[in-house]
Length: 166
Image (cartoon, rainbow, N blue to C red; front, side):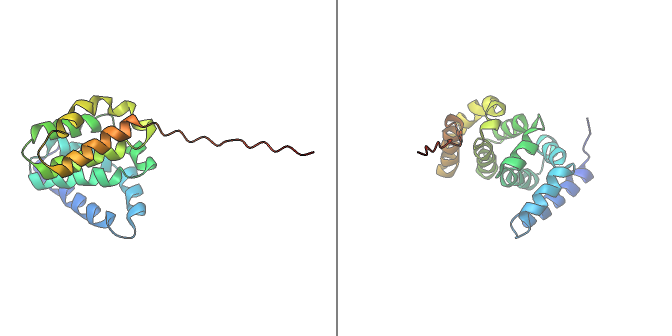
């Protein structure tokens, strides 16, 4: 397990700011793949667990929520076994920071869109429900979206069409 020093955390926070800015531009998908291929997920989880600067935690949680917008990114993120627990622990420890909580619940709701992620999110249900009771309507909306996404099973079946010819 890696240990993160203050200088490493600051460097990673700077990279996350760059990644976040780049994620909002036209080359977002290309950069997402680059972040997910490198040690980007490990760095993000490290920042969630060891970061102590509010801005760093906000950028890290926002980056995760932004990366969790498609199936490939979701799979790469959730393959890191500590990500969901790190998000839930951070959310529970920062009950007075609605911005970070909004990023976290938005990320969890994005993860819940995909059936393959639902088993990994079972441990997050208590935190999702807790966030559904906070004062912010924006956080409540994302919590409701997360629960809704967890409850809906999206199975896409290709129906075979049988044609009868005489």
